[in-house]
Image (cartoon, rainbow, N blue to C red; front, side, top):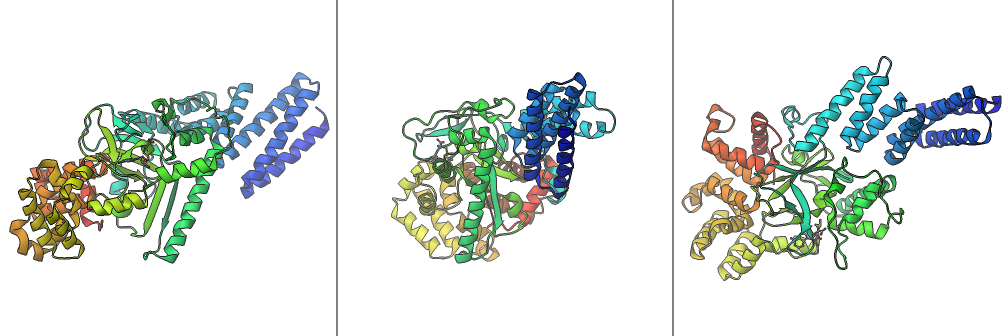
Amino acid sequence: MTGGIEEQMQLLRSRAAELSLREDWKEYINLYSHLISLCDHHHHHHHHSPGSDAKLHKTLCLALSNRAEARSRLRELSGALEDCDRVLEIDPTHLKALICKGKILLDLDRYTQASDCFQRALVYQGTGNAEALRRLLERCRRLEAQSRTGSLDISDWLLNGFGGNPPELAEYVGPVEVRRSANGGRGLSATKSVEAGTPLVITRAIAIGRGILPEKAGGSGESARMVMWKDFVDKIFDATEKCSRTLYLIYTLSAGDEEGDPGIPDMGLFSPEASKESFFLENKEPDVDKILKVLDVNCLTEEAFSAKVLGKNSGYCGFGLWILPSFVNHSCCPNARRLHIGDRVVVHASRDVKAGEEITFAYFDVLSPLSKRREMMSKRWQFHCHCERCRFEEKVFLVQELREIEMALESGSDAGGVVARLEEGMRKWMVKGREKGFLRASFWTAYSGVYESEKLIRKWGRQVPAEAVVAESVAEAVGGDERVLKVLLGRLKKKGGIGGSAGGGLQMERAMRLGRGTYGKVAKKQGMRTLLELALASNAH
Ligand SMILES: C[S@@+](CC[C@H](N)C(=O)[O-])C[C@H]1O[C@@H](n2cnc3c(N)ncnc32)[C@H](O)[C@@H]1O
């Protein structure tokens, strides 16, 4: 090798060291790209002795693995992965490339492949790395197991008052399948029967927008929202540019204007481990118009329990795009809920679900009357819900008296009176079973208004059914909900039940069940108990 190139490379490398100190990864990558092309060029255009060849290879491998590290810092994971693979082709024992590749695969939720890299690194490593590698391997193993079973336990985080980082969760595709839905489009269905609280899907967001909005809606609130949205859209486009799989997955989602058949995606697509390496797209340039439509149809607000249950901040606002949950349709009597932990969403059954049943969750608050829900649907979502509850309420709202009761509620009249009239009406109109729960859910604010007021309880007690009865019937109709849980727990507390040793009774069992439906099976008994205490202390609505 001539002195010229050696010197040039030396110079580039010391410049790179400087850039890395300044954390200027873009420039750092450019520099190493230059060095890599120098190596490639030199390799093709010069005759070499075996010794100089080895040296050149060594330089090239180092340059590639350094660029890979910088690329993965900027989350350009596909590019980083290609760099690692090039190194490992030249030198399959290259420690730096093996570790870097393992970490990238871990980031991509490909736990078995990541663990394979770390295992090999452990074999080839000299001294020093072993402890760190064992910890990485342990993490892979834990995540891999969780991605098979979906079982999670956030007890430690919970008992720690949600302090520190949220627990790391694995991607999980449970007993669900994308199928054609009764409403025409596609939907997610259960492939086997599961009980309330069972996790169905756990997945990372493509991007999340989070922020605190000013308390009062209005000018500044609106512009804050706009800034958050723009920031979020930028993150989405950034993600599609960096990963063809992401772009591919986004294209499987509904853009709201499908002509004809939107097609049923293969379930393998949604498991990072089962998924192919690369995705063929005719045009790698993102279709901006289409992506914006997809965001409009599929973005969901966060049911941030750590914000609500902990009463952290009432102005908290979060929304995001999660791929597989985007196939879940809305229902006003849903059977699933979502819970957000870090940037992952856990979709879990909020009541018992039978095999073949479609999985649905609420896109907006469904503890509200039909007219309010219709308003939400037309304002934010351009569809008309035909769920069992909407169909029933459309019918029953033909009854003049029910409309009068609703008007009484809206004009702020005595909640006890509203509840008493409704309960009486339901007897008259022979409303039974689940349908009772539907109407109670619609008039929820009246019920909770009574239960929260000693005065109203005293006044209307005899015409208003017990908390536990109403909570059960609402939960059976529309699934677990924090506010319903809170009413049930309030009752238990009055009787001295929660937390104490008396907590083993039937009522406590019911509360635990409702807790599992509301938050999912996220903790063992003691952890769940803590969660219930938090729910009771919360100011959810
Ligand atoms: C997040 S996507 C759900 C999956 C979608 N059905 C698909 O085929 O990809 C939201 C869209 O699904 C449709 N949708 C969801 N819930 C619905 C419901 N209850 N009734 C009618 N359409 C609904 C609407 O077109 C809505 O804009």
